[in-house]
Length: 289
Image 1: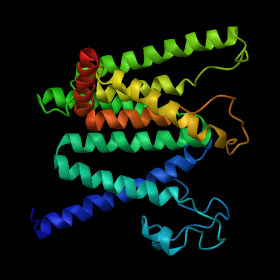
Image 2: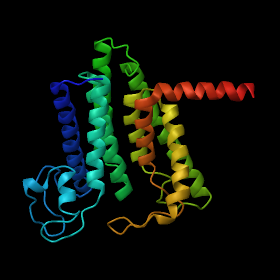
Image 3: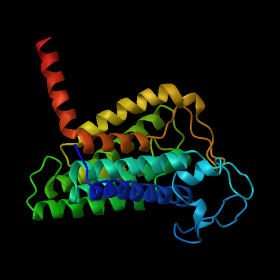
Image 4: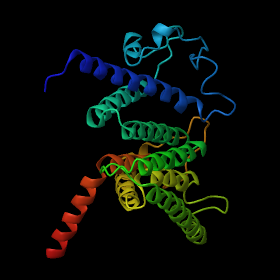
């Protein structure tokens, strides 16, 4: 495939836009859990020495490597997670544009991925999911569903408005019921204290947000993949779980579930049809076996 100079320019443009959004997500992930701090103001600054960061130190990916992963002024280490998120968002922006071009689905999936990444890392850091982020997913998912229905979009990526509404309602209802039932059982068994819950209320809201994008037919795959990946991760990283930044110690035998819901939602949104086809082929194979 031969690209024109204009198309090559668009490739760089979409990648750069993605990295800029990724840089902003780094701010969201850092500031959103902090009570009273805006994600827009004050301007970017070192959280250690409070010095404002110059514009030439805010170039996505590049600045982190130029500075050696440290603040220019106080030399405090800057997490390598920031350039990673910038690179991931740049890659997704480019891949989505190459796959779909200038279509609503490009913007839809980009927004979906960005919010899921923010939710996942905030949950990892704090074990909490800010309610406004899943609500934003619900609203935008239904808006894109309305656009899809209005345009009578029959592409395989499109999920119609009604399926999104059902997915959002079922996603919240299912996980809320599971949360209440599992909490009651574990309290009766003495595994939880009277003020503890089996999971946070952010998870039902997150599944509602994911359902607003993948629809009700995609939710079973999201739940199944999240559980499988969560169990595998629990066996690997549970011994490494440490207290949060504010000193809170996670309960014994617990693991954050939001990142695995987010990952599964992303997988179903991008490769839902392939996952569905593979599961059907596996069911046929097991049935014959």
